Amino acid sequence: MTSSPAPRLSTRSLAAGYPGRRVIEDLDLDIAPGRITMIIGANACGKSTLLSVLARVNSPLGGRVELDGVDVATIPRRRFAQSVGLLPQHPTAPDGLTVGELVSRGRHPHRGVFQRWSADDSARVDDAMTRTGVANLADRPVGDLSGGQRQRVWIAMALAQEPRILLLDEPTTFLDLSHQIEVLDLLRTLNRTDGTTIVVVLHELNLAARYADDLIVMSGGRVLVHGAPSDVLTSDVVADAFDLDALVMPDPLTSTPLVIPRPGGAHVATDEA
Amino acid sequence: MTGRIVETRARVRRRRAIVVAAVLLAVLLVGTVSLSVGDYAISPVDVWRTLWGAGDRAQSYVVFQVRAPRLAMALLAGAALGAAGALLQSLLGNPLASPDLLGISGGSGVAAVFAILVLGLGGPALAAAAFAGGLAVAAFLLLAGHHRSDGGYRLILAGVGVAFLCTALTSFLMVRAQVELAQGALVWLTGSLASTPWWNVLTVLIAILLALPAVIACARWLPITQMGAPTAASLGVRSSTVKIVAVVTAVLLTAVTCAFVGPISFVALCAPAIARPLLGHGAIGVGTSAALGAAILAGADLVAQFAIPGYSMPVGVVTGALGAIFLLWLLATSKGRQL
Image: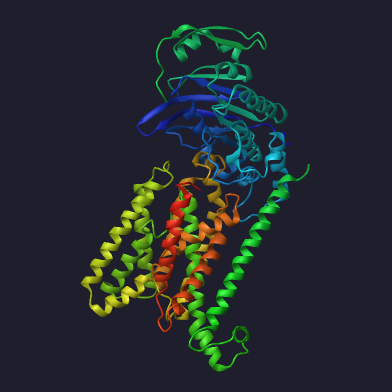
């Protein structure tokens, strides 16, 4: 597999959001290459907005996103897609599309418009399906799969893209706990074997703290803290970011921070995103 | 490594090859029949001999000057409409999307009738007018219905409204015009392949060749944009760009057929709807739709010429009648499912 070091993804004086409503203002951020970064925060704190700008789904309203110091706006989209992949929150598969076809579409950035499918493309797709454990589903329609299987298929598509940086927007939402663990274990394996930088927006604080090398806690469009989970995830930070009274103690199994809400600890009903 | 995906792709390719071969065979069959039947009957064997330059003078004249241009126009226009329909349906993710239901044909129609009746235009100028009309409608729709979340239904409803408006405008132009002119415009409006000169065929061919690179690019892009704008963006494809390219291409293909054979209805709706299930696998099927469109229009023209002995109908009557039945069937079976 590719072993070149992942490029560094950063933001400089970034402003993002929607015309007329800036969610993020003046953000400087460096995502550590080759590590797993998890972004957590209350609803509407700007974490998905940040991810979509990092992935170039939306353009910054101000400032810039940089890849190894180069403004990404100057990089052709297809070349950018060869380095950075995104698994959005609600990807859609057309009716009847098979798993194999879907995963194959991940090869798009590596092929010119008039270029034919190559043996290398096949090898990459096979590899992506094998590593995510969906190879035996290749001929099944995506629509027939369970939520956990489907999520692994989408991750396979993102892997076929061979990104050095993979961004995922709430990849475990709607999955039961064992499938959440399965997806996060898969991401960790990818990170450890290829050195792929992985950036995940996650709702589950305790899982984020367990799987992250670096944790970013956002609040009101700002980065509250950024660092190793055991250093940055304190009860004060949880109170700031989530308006929640919680006990933070070491997880008895992994000694990563474990956030336990105190009974009646929610001060304010958080706004819906 | 077992090469799982190689098998899967080989199976998909084999299926596509069979479908395309079958459709092309149908085209060949329809084509041969079209060239042989008529007031001056020529046996299929003689048709082929004539095409290879071995026919007698009378046969050569009938085949090359009378029947071949008409057949060629039917094939080209059908292919253009089939491809245009496939582009629009994949783009909007809705099986009801087609140039006629979206009002694009209507826009081309109004502009063309205006060009015929008021400006007295014909030929390439007429094609340009039809293109402008179709593009105006398409631009309006893109501006009006940019909420994509409802599977393009808002856009299609807007299009149906525009189509009615266009019909009203066309009627207004028609009743204001002199009877002889209006009669000619009416035949054009119904869609007719009768008396097609070769240079018309050539013009349409050139327009299709011009559109071809864009069609091929869209065939590569649309499967990506189908997965939603964020996924497409992460694969390096900008949905907004693809939308514009696909719509302009579809309008060009629709307008050029519209200008020379009239707004032929329903081919663009039917061809992709038949092609997709034949191909399976969530395919876009632009090429297959084009081949099917060619077969359908050439076949419909045969029916139009010979269904009622001694009376040749405009082909639009046949596609309209067949297409209406097909549309009802589609509405009854699709349950509003998206592509």
